[in-house]
Length: 308
Image (tube, rainbow, N blue to C red; front, side):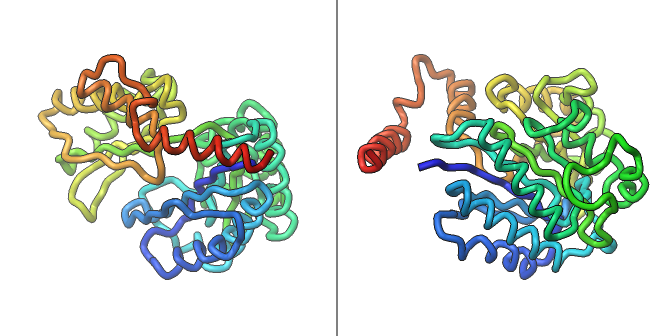
C-alpha cells in the first residue's frame, strides 16, 4: 500500500465552523485519514495533516480546496502569517512505498485539476518546481494576495496551471512535493517585535543562519508577546534543538526569556528523538529502543505479508 502525507494550509484561523466544513470534505473519502488539525488566531491560519492512498488523497485535497474557495474571501482576510490563497499551500510528502518522483507527478495532476476546474492559478514549488526561482515557497508568496494581481502579469510568474489572473477571492495556490517539514515556533516574553525580527534574521538561512530554516517575526497581540515562527525544511541537517538553543542565547542578549514553543501539525518521531538525545545526553540510543517504533515495524511487516 502506498501512503502519502499532506498538510494543506488554509487562510482561516478564527472561524472554527469554516475550518470544520473544510475538514469535513476529507472525512468522507475512503482510505484517507485525518491525523491532526489546528487553528491560530494571530496567524489567522489553519493546518490540517492527513495521510492516505494517492488517488483518494488527491480527491480529498481537491474537495477541501474547493470548499475553502467557497468559504474564504481573502479580500477581508487579515493575519500575521503571509498568505496568497484561501488554500495557501498543498504539500505532498512520500511516506511509504512511494517515491518523491511519484509525488511530483501527483502534485502536477492535483495542480492541473485545481486550475482547470476551480479557476485558481497554481504554482508548483519545492521538488515539483518548473524553474529555480519557484522552488522556494517564500519567493512565490512574496507580495501576498494583494500584490499578486500585478505580480502575475510578469512572464516569470505565469502560473503552471489555471488562468493567468488571480482568483478574486481565493487568490492563488502552491502545490508541490517535498520532504517532511516541521513548523516550529518559539514565543518570547516581550512585546518588542524588533527583537523577534533580529532573532529571526540570526537563524534563517537567507540572512546567514541555518541552511534549512525559514524564519519570520510574528506579533502575537492576543497573547501579549512576539514569536519567531519557523519552517524547518530538513530537521536532520538543521536539528530542532540546535536552532532552539541559538534562539534562546540570542534572546538572552536582549534580556528576553523564551516563554514557550509550539509545533504546528505533526512531527517525525526521529526529530523528537534527537531532541531527547541532546537534552538527556543519551548515549547509544536510537529508534529501536522506542516501543511504539518497534510495534509499527511489526505491523508494517505484517501488512506486507498480507499484500503478498
